[in-house]
Amino acid sequence: MKKFFLSTVGGLVLGLFLSFTFMDYESSWMHHTQRAGVDQVVNEMDFDFVFFATILVLVISVLIFAVWTFIEKKKDESFIRDFENDKKRDD
Image 1 (cartoon, rainbow, N blue to C red):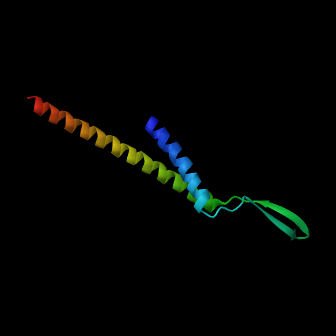
Image 2 (tube, helix red, strand yellow):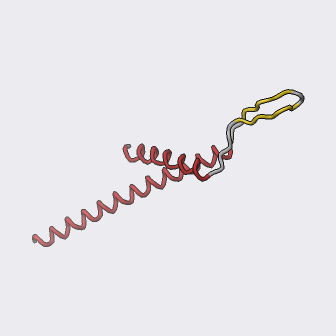
Image 3 (tube, rainbow, N blue to C red):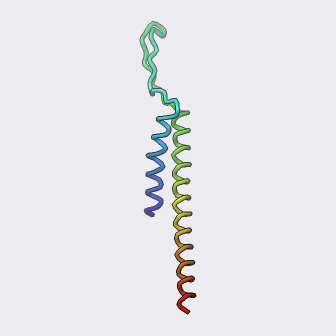
């Protein structure tokens, strides 16, 4: 549970930082002047940015989780291998 939570938080922080840094974020509002004789403010959401930022966060979270799992398995394998080698030396 700790690994899942920390990989999600890490993916969120790193993914949002990278998306705001390298992706072209447009403001969530646009101002149209003199449209039909009236100044108008239209609220819009940058759905492309939100979609790609979400995908980036998910991919980074999965990568962090996968790398963390791989490292844990390698540590376990090396521990078992060292334990068996020590056991053979004692016999």
